[in-house]
Image (tube, rainbow over all chains, first blue to last red; front, top):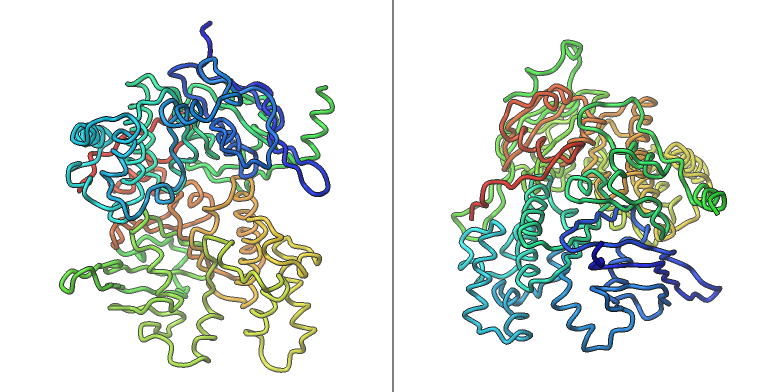
Length: 284
Length: 285
């Protein structure tokens, strides 16, 4: 088997507090191979966003991180500033939940899209714009030339998220980290944006780490799933959606209302921290 | 399409609580002769003890309809009545506003911004109780009633002394529901009230909402873009697209076999077993 593109081995992130320590990532391990999509699923506070921040080394300095994170065989935790900058700008592309929080509202869409190419890669401005236009067209933005001259507030959320995808693709990364990229969108825009992301990713052979709270959405767009609870991955693999084995995954799948049938009462999760600790103690 | 035609036979003989008849809301647009028509000839009825869902994408006007119902927006045209009283002209005085609030209460999407961060939970609910009980009720009685309501939404006595920031998102939404119940309203508008919650919490709140309906007479106007949630909670639904009602009917029937192309596209976009995301036709500019 080839070496994974991204490898996390027993990653722990501990926050030092006045009274002691709080471990927010507790031994997270997974691999993503080139061209593969992994869905990281969990509820709020489970540590899925912290995991992406650990991968890009953007955790608050107050965290103590241990374990190993390797990208293409290189340890991310050992990178110097220059290498880290290169890694963040060219190897990994990031898409966030709220595109509006990640664009500068006083800069035109065109400047946002071409800035990195012009500044970091020394691409000619006209050439950068030409590439941006091609990509905007590929992600389903009509009249791309006109869009380049518009400001972020003139675009809808779904449209702006397509611009974000285009900006990530422009940098030609090997891995895309998408943190709840469709949570703020309508179902139809969600379907659209995910279809575009999926299609572009496959066409370019990019790997994807897809962070979401939606098990069904993750299952539809990813090769494998990893389910997080309390800073740990409780279950991962290709089987998770169709044949979950961990009680938390089973209960999580059952709690979501179905569009096909109505139940008298929705099953409520009984899995809690106590059950979690008990189960862990039994396993060890 | 008129919602009244689709109502089951058991409705005959009961008076609707809320009637919207060709409701319109026009906002001034970017230029003078380019107004934004947010709500366009919307008609529906809400009957006692039912849950009517308004479904649509963002910008479809569903929240504007609800805001007109509670008086947060004025009505441009059309007729809106609650128990036969018109709400089209707006409130004239404080007594009117209180009476309106007693009839229709509102639960917002984001429980982080809808509660006063400097008020204790007991006071948040107590204030609402105090506003709506008649004269001659002591402070003690108001407090006791607030505690009783908190208890009915699954928050024990210890929560009364806490502040919103000490609560989780699900607990805050319970407080928002308790505050609405404190007015003992005939109608509660739930505007994307479970959209921001985790799946496990969402299930609890949906169960709580059905428990409340089992215990008291109350109707819900449930605004949502999530068809799975709508299927779980509502009996009837209307579908809005760009300010207009394009489809209406019994929720289970509409979702089992959607006929209107817009309803069909909304249903097709919901992730479910075996589902794959599909690209919409290229975005119109």
